[in-house]
Image 1 (spheres, helix red, strand yellow):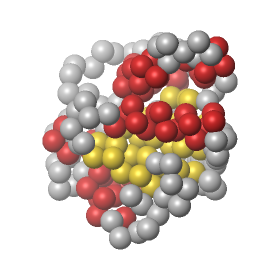
Image 2 (image 1 turned 135 degrees about the horizontal axis):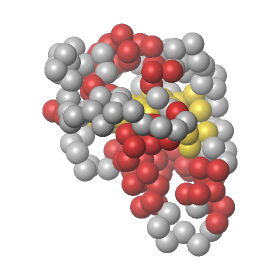
Image 3 (image 1 turned 60 degrees about the horizontal axis):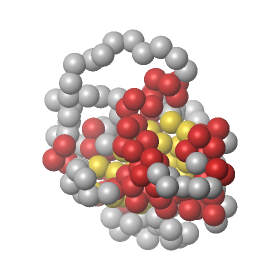
Amino acid sequence: ILDPDVHLTVLLGSAGTGKTLITIATALELVLEKKKYDRIIFSKTQDSQFEDIGFLPGSEAEKVIPFCGAAIDALEFLHKDDANPQGSIEEIMKRNVIQFKALNFVRGRSFTNTILVVDEFQNITPAQAKTILTRAGMNCKVVIMGNLSQIDSKFISPVNSGLTYVTEKFKNWDGCR
């Protein structure tokens, strides 16, 4: 993730291996300390293997944050003993260093000077993967994370998952690791 020549990072691993924690920590380093990017956009599919909880009130971020618990957990872990108010979760959120976005609204956007993080990529179709990856503009690093054994969609399998598609399509590109 820290390599400036790698524009697409694919993290594969079982639940609890630290994919989100490592990604959030390195993304914060690249934005706050090294100032290589302006912001982090974190997103994930909003599909669930559980019953739908219905309408969620609020802004886009307020609707998406319940689905981004792994990123919030990582932020809390990284800043639990933080005596620096500039690096606190509240300050990071207030300054829009990290934003939580719904994948439903990425079409037509172009992310520049951004680290785009998409979690649970195994639940994305190849067409959705293409839509997401083509949003990367100038100075955009894309990090996708997933685990093919945790597919929640009844319409997606390890064979037709966007995670498999991206891994196969970019396996020989030097800009992907």
